[in-house]
Image 1: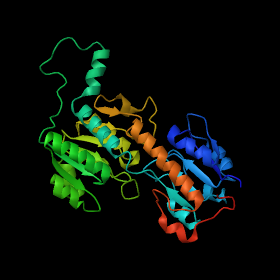
Image 2: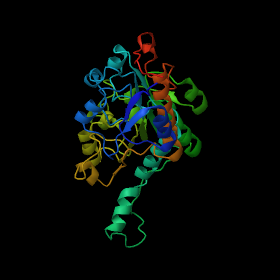
Image 3: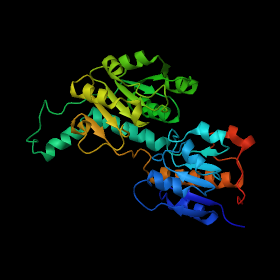
Length: 335
């Protein structure tokens, strides 16, 4: 029996890719950049499965170009790059890779938090520029962490993991804003659910861990920054468009807030001449929060499992839209 045909939009770690290649008739896009849109549309035309990255827009038009498509396996915990409703209407299962990157992302959020608070970037730049002449009693003074207030926007797995680090290591007070109550975080960490304005005005550090949707897009705008402390540090390891980039630039440039640490941006990537990159109080990393051996291997395993299980007509390991099952599309060559 013929193997199901799939397209993989970029190489993933060997632990997952090897299984995909063994089970499927798979083509892997070899380039370091995502396949162009017109190439992706052509490649999926006769595919039963698609393993994609968050860099690909998987919309209704692409799904309609792939009448045999049965499963979309996203190599990411987020899935805002996929029109899930369109997939469900067409009987296509969608999977993602949650949980395995929780600790790595929480670690990265704290890395950005402490680096921005302690002025790591601008002090290093001054060394390179020859400005470090001696120990300076008034030089490169940053913000303290101990017993400060952390505001978490989105108290899910990653937000909770960061709160655990800040509460246990630095005795921080934890505030959070979320559409759902996290009773576990309240009980174990003393976290307090507050409204968004309260979180903005009372937090010394704000870390974003919410999903990107129409309600959260641009929620950190000029009005939000005006409500924050001038000593506040903003961290974003979620999705770039949650923060209004121009408003953030103005807030950092004018001293409306103290600093920011960003692992995600809008646009992404930022061009090298982007004004945000010129600021000494803004640290930007190239979306590397999940970039550890264990996390990326775990993502590869889940992505491969989702793809193969979907092709077999079995429940996905991490299923975004299980409601699709009653009318799941079944390609003729699934094995």
